[in-house]
Length: 200
Length: 278
Image (cartoon, rainbow over all chains, first blue to last red; front, side, top):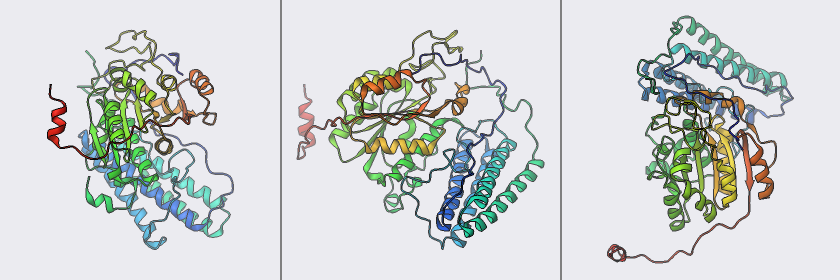
């Protein structure tokens, strides 16, 4: 039970300085993984689907708050992830969505590695921030597949995981290039002249 | 609810309405919505067999965003409406959604008696320790030293402890979840729905606008280090001594749910109206 002894808390008046932080995920996969190829592909597919759904949710949230530029960027990222999911379905899963465990897949860190953490948005964030989030997701996905490639006991899984790790690394490089072409945010990007919190 | 949805595969997406949430970007309630829909899919429920009832506040907008039956009720009275619905339609899976202001202040009395009655429903409180919709007033779970323009120096008031109160009042299932872990929250919700009787799930759901420091909750929460217990005394000790960030099922009892016999048959509207004539 909380006894009111949590750290002293105070409201941030009118938009104090804060950066959009990209959440780190814990617990990398290191132990041997005994998964067959079908289970591995199911994981890979749902990972792409969940990433697409989260970006779509982000796009809706930014749309509702008239941050159209970022909304469009998230929408684009959602389309890209959905495309990856569809490709997997088409090329590796005989166009049949895999049957997942009834309780869902248990991921290290709670969510699939390519899914952006739900609390990473800010209503005044800029495309640069969105791309930083996407880059972190791609890097986590790359690491996830690379860990599988080095730890899976099944040779086919190792080989497929290696290919997927390479793909995700490619995506990360694309986003890094994209970031280079995107203006970094102004230092007062978070400043809202009419903030939602009481500031007078 | 669309008829197309009834025929569609039972993915979480099926349970999402076409209405887009208007919560602030980064608000924890988005993830709670996602946990609701994942739990429904996990349990292989059908949209037409679920009702989500709410009160007033940011979190209480959730029925509009789910593709099932919904009732956006009056402030603090969500549990009264949900209880009545479950008693009248025990075949429905009833979830009642609320926030810490709606549920513990305005609806505090209903909370006590809903726990006591132990009707088979799931009560979800999205707790962000603030009244968000009305622009940041302290709620019953706000820390006494929370300093803000609307509570300079803090209220100095002891916080309300919903899990302890739920246990003392007779809730049959008590859990705490965190919106930043939507899959874990979905698992807890599914277990709450499956467990007969009154299930209470407090979800820590940050308000990024009025309590931006709550973004750090993701670094504070941890899985409860113990398995659920059915011993109320043990549960009380656990809940009384944790710091509010232990996540998981904390108590799971075996009380028989309250369900009065259903009166068969229907009445004409005129007859019902006559019963209310003074």
